[in-house]
Length: 507
Image (tube, rainbow, N blue to C red; front, side, top):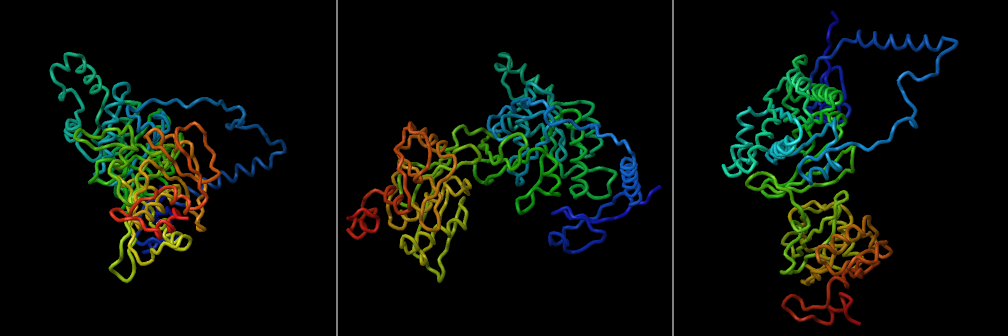
């Protein structure tokens, strides 16, 4: 019987070493090496030797065949559309690229308590109307899952007698008959149930709590997560079962376990948001069947998660009550345009060095824009505190929001009100110029749909003419400030001639 050997695997980069180190020699992470038992070298050497012998035999043959054994020509591969079926939630389908692909592995990660299990239980309830669903609960018992489903109004028990008489009770019974729950952590039992039941969709909650009895490491270790995911992938591809896998995240926000976990699956989604706020964002960072960086927006209500049909209204403040230092931008998350209100506050500092703080905006971008405003426009911001936040806390990381940040900061510095019917779109260069951005026509259509009248965009940007907006092309940041901030008194004070000259309204 071949002997096993011990090796140590880094749970950050996946590097393997024959002995333990306090620091991974490959990625430099401390305390990331974990012990695992692997097959002996004799088996590996025998396998490699057999392959070398076969290669030598083929090369020595004078009439070696050049015909393919299993491969096929690229031109012979049929080009057909990928079949999909809806999940029951339009926001979920949007992030997946148009629906669920049979046989796909979908990994969903997020902070504890953010609503991953709630989202998947509601999705399983919707899918059970037309498909056979298996919900593998490795963290809760069947009774706990049923209680949580009752809080979400899932099932027959929550229907009134009148609704049951009207036929809704029949549909609820069908859903309950098609939805199976398996409280199990043993991988072999789960694989046997998948092969026996053959559901169309299976939910694994969660992958870090499963264990393979043949491995000596604890559940959640690098070896366990890798082997469990690999075994589930083989069954899913062979039986054409779609797997929705829940993954825990580390304190840095990345999915716990080895990087090979994200490489094995077809789609990686992050369910994020502030647990003290009502809205949640489902974001795709990897998708073999659609675009990445798409987002779906949900709202946590009393009965679970509810889709947000118009996310721009969620991240758009009250335009009827204008205040100084507020500007509106149109950010694009994947192919979805979202109108976001940015708020800036500039005030004298009480410390030796001024403070800069951001919420939903990249901190380094704010530092760069402040430097451009002071160097190119002469706005003295080096001794002032600057705070910038996006309404609703939506993360706006793309450069197209630079122009809105710059105008909001100047408006707060001058105590002026930006025209609430104007949106600002453009990237700010280090020379004070306004650069072109992508998907301009899509952004302008979203702004026009929400009732905005003007749009300040980079000069030379291409878009359609019949969008229902007054488009103002600008080349410099100062031109955008003049166009966005109309002549007005200083929020309770008269406008002096010098201030009009500063903003370009004087002669």
